Length: 81
Image (tube, rainbow, N blue to C red):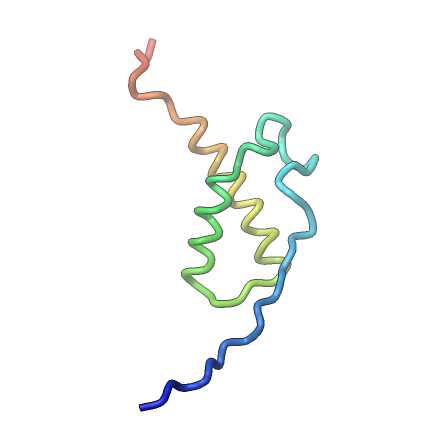
């Protein structure tokens, strides 16, 4: 049986209206959220197959909030006194 032609659309680039080093984020967060951004993007992509600028903006905001939450967790190896 012959192969069917590919029906995938040409990929499109989508950009946020700001970046993770933007002044809207606290200085101690800027540029440190890469892993949380990637995880947040994967979560968003599991719910949809398309993204627009507002989705990517949301990923930056949600990823930064996740980064802040993780960094505020106490190190379980440190004593709590």
